[in-house]
Length: 461
Image 1 (cartoon, rainbow, N blue to C red):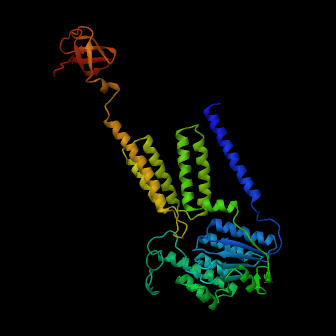
Image 2 (cartoon, rainbow, N blue to C red; image 1 turned 90 degrees about the vertical axis):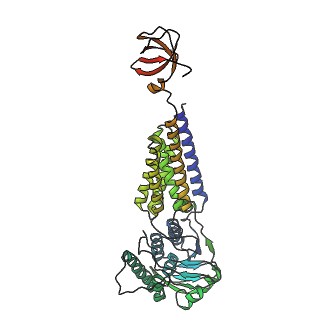
Image 3 (cartoon, helix red, strand yellow; image 1 turned 60 degrees about the horizontal axis):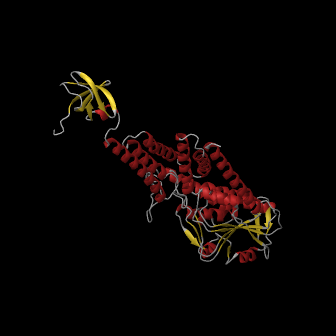
């Protein structure tokens, strides 16, 4: 078997092993659609709200409905997240036939930004002592002058002309106010404070939230929450439901392998690395046809990156700049331009990486240290190529016409006008301006076709 066939065999065995592991995980991890008795399903969120969180909560709520659960409890601790993922979660809550209680727990947790909207959308809103919610002002996407939040203590003048770039910000804030107010009115909660949380970014402690009618319950733990809401009537999309939650079985439904995989690949830094590995893998396969492994790995990584990036707020100009930067750095290796291609590639790569993820939402940005580490690696590659090119330029010529000039040889025949000389272990036709005798040392002055122009070699001079 040749090397190409052996490589294909290795890759196929590796892919089969990965498939077996995935199937084993799918069989051994408890499924979302399993039948079970009535009880309380607990879903836990302790990170930024993103595509993986949305997938986990939506499937968890659907599973609870299939199993005829009495209640879904979302245990929440989040700094916020992506608007698209938050709205998907809220749609699932609003459409759920099973009542959903969102519980900010344990003590020290928070339901900031997107978490506040989810809390307002839930049938029951509860918090543990020493928790907080609020700061629900939407984070602008795309940035730019005037697009960020007002500076602390800065007052706005409604009669003043809008500053450049503020229109988009105002649209986003007005949309968010209308959205959270509609949720507050649906659940009969404090709509005025909800509007303040969006327009001014205010926050509340658990005790203040209970006093202002933002939440219904303060509890120290989940069993206490179930006791406190027992007998309450809530309204789902399918009509009123009276909760009978005291003493019910609590089942914690942790994220399965699919959610964990989605959480990993939708991490912007991981998606960024997958993108780079995919691009480099395909480029190396293109320059080394038949290598197989770089192409297979590159294609898989590129497809995973494409799936992850389409779930994230991506700036496609940044994506194009990254691809251009990598191509220019690789081009420097094969078509040395003494830094023009390579340095341009590094600059395009850094700019594209910085603007790739088009949001300032906490937890959804690419680490600058990772960006500059990858840029440094690309820069070192470019400088290594430059060093090799400069060294090659300064090295003495070892082939061709230029290499012959100045070499020392020996006249094999008398040379009146033409004759023969021995140079570089080869016998050459030669001519000289002055007569030479056989056996004299000669120096090559020029090369005229296949005839050397020589002169007498004076060792002293």
